[in-house]
Structure formats: C-alpha cells, structure tokens
Image (cartoon, one colour):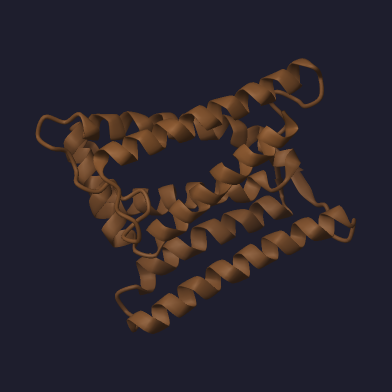
Length: 219
C-alpha cells in the first residue's frame, strides 16, 4: 500500500503542477476557455470573472502538489484532490456529451497540449479514481491512528512560500504577458517557476535536516 500511495502522489502531483503552470503561462487564453465553459453550463454570473478564476485555478493546481511534498500538509491535499477532480470530471462529462458538440479543447494543459472532449473526460475520470484511492488509504491510516483525519491548520513558513510560488506565475502572466517581448516573457516566466520550486525543495530539505526555522501560526 505504501508504494501505491507514493506512485499516486507522484502521478497526481506531476499532472496538477504541469497543468497549473501550463495554463498560467497564458491566463488570458485560459480565461476564454473558462468563459466558454460558463456558457456551456449556463453560469453567466461568472462572465466577468474569467481572468480572476483563471488565476485562482492555476494557483490551486500548483499549490496542492507543493503542499503534498510535506507529510504534515497531505491531510489537506488528500481531501482537496477528489473535490477538484470531481468537479472537473463533471464539467468534462457535460462537455463530452453536449448535443451541440461541446468545446473543442478543454484547456486542461493550456495551449501546450490540446485534448478532445472525450480524452479530457476519461483523463479526469482516471485521475478522480486515483484521488479516491488515495483518500481511501488516508481513511484507513486514520482509522488505525497512524495519521489524523482532520489535522490542525497551520499557516507556516513553507505554506506561505508554496502560496507565493503558486500565485506569482499567473499574476506575472496577467501583468506582463502583453507588455514584454515574447522571448523575454517566456524566460522570465520559467525563471520564476524554477526559483520558486528550488526554494520550496530547499526548505523541505532543510526541515529534514533540522536547519530550517519551524515557525507557524495555528488557525
């Protein structure tokens, strides 16, 4: 079971963080995809919030894998994955079964990889199954007293760092994508991601060697 958990964590983590950053590189294009889904689902109330939703979705998709790098944060992530993937599976199912043909590309990986409605739905459903399996493992461990079911929320230094690493790329895209030359923009965007990921990994390594200050605020 332990090896299966590790494999699932890795699969979900890689797909989520790649999905988040690939959409974040062009939040304007992703916001148009969100508006298309809003029209498909009849959610006109979010029509003026496309760019805000694009930034938030990119941030959440990048944040969850970063939080899961630490065992203490995984109890939050293990509940978040099924909720998010359940929502994605629902809207991709509606898109795949739409009588009017649905949206040609789901925008799951931004403009980098285009998936058909059917492939997008089966991808989301497969990831949902993996997330539910991961949640099952968590419930079994909680039942045996090996891990708390709902741990105390801690806003510590690493969580703040992970939030910054997740929110800065989409914000950078929103502010500078149309103002900088394309090559310079891509270089700076990728540099921000690399620096943020490096700092997060370094912090975790420092924690494991007891070199990092463990400051936190209990909420």
